[in-house]
Length: 87
Image (cartoon, rainbow, N blue to C red; front, side, top):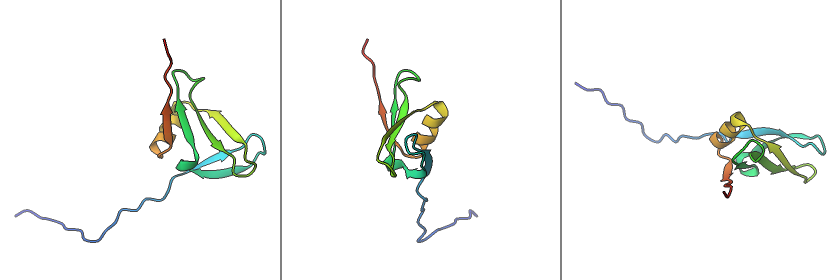
């Protein structure tokens, strides 16, 4: 005889992912949701970065993103733009 389990009325809920960030202009530290960040993946380390607008001072911030940062941001649902170079 096989055992079966039935689950009724359960909803999977996930807490929103928050990323810690800091502004180099006003030195504020804060948490941002995935929708507040943008990730650009280029052909090199120089052209791979993430960006956001500082919620405190309004500055546009752009920071380099290494492999680990790219992995964390993409896994957390940050919108990603893949940059292509022309040959």
